[in-house]
Image 1 (cartoon, rainbow, N blue to C red):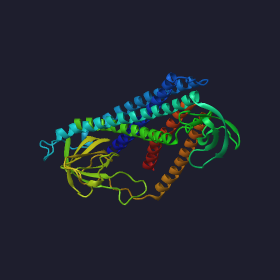
Image 2 (cartoon, helix red, strand yellow; image 1 turned 60 degrees about the vertical axis):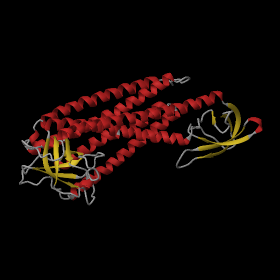
Image 3 (cartoon, one colour; image 1 turned 120 degrees about the horizontal axis):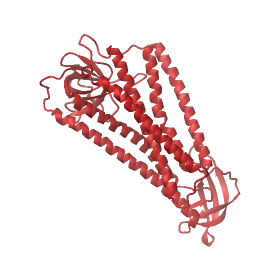
Image 4 (cartoon, rainbow, N blue to C red; image 1 turned 90 degrees about the vertical axis):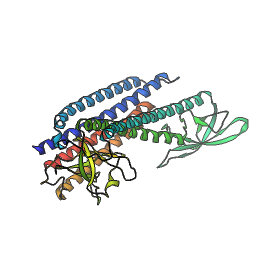
Length: 434
């Protein structure tokens, strides 16, 4: 019965993580699409292409619907997990009349878990601000290019050279005559898809106050340094936002779980994944309670790492929470005197002293071959997905649908996160059944 409950708990928490990641990805996509649409509606001179507004509205409604669906399914699995978490003895022994607190105030430490929630929420706001700054940066670049097109001096220039690079931006070199017979040449980023030939006549638009600032009728020639800075900002902001939201939700769950269960004194040993093998994982934490029962936890991905604590086996600590939402509280960290909370989740249910907890499984050549085969298929499928996203982005750029292109690239880059969770959950289930 314990084995069945263990598998049910693992199944429900995996699906919860999948739906949480899906809600974050689709929510971020909805926010991005809404920001692009609002900018297009408010930007002076912006004209929607045929059907562009309908496409953006459809995408927004679809993304919001997917967010609502992920939230509803996540709550459904949360209710199922609640039935398993209600029985604390599967993960914690009965509370003792006197808990060995030492110099640690466990009530205060429980309240401090709430600070981790607030800190993660603060990071969410920071990354939202970063993404807002990126959107504002792209809007400013677009407005600057449009302003130069409207107010700049137009002269007839000549294409001096066309250069395509395997890495970096393709460029064209143009020569033009500025004011007072000042002949100049400039390198212009070539991203419109229009074809150029050396010697071709071309209209060049330059800023009278700064003739070095130049563009053509088709090439906006945005500053490449700032463009890359904004692209990096998108990648950092999107990934940081996703991780911060997940951290905030998980810390809130751990806080509520510890608040419900309290703390139990135990002896713990941190066991890193050394030597590193295929399928590397976070450190395991072997726990032995005062009633001689055992359980194996695994440290969750967090800035509160447990590897530096591996040098002191069988050290005293306190365990709180249940199932996926557990916390190991050490009296102090490696370099800090205050107590140190490490997030963790249970690998098995609590067992008696006559059983070993979470003994490492021996290597199985058949399972290893199966994992390698499925991983190769997954890499091929993922490569195909990103190829489709790249082709779609190129098509949208050639049609001058920049905001839909931005949305497609963002959603296409983040969508594999929940799909990866589903895929590897099924792989783990197949390995367990085999």
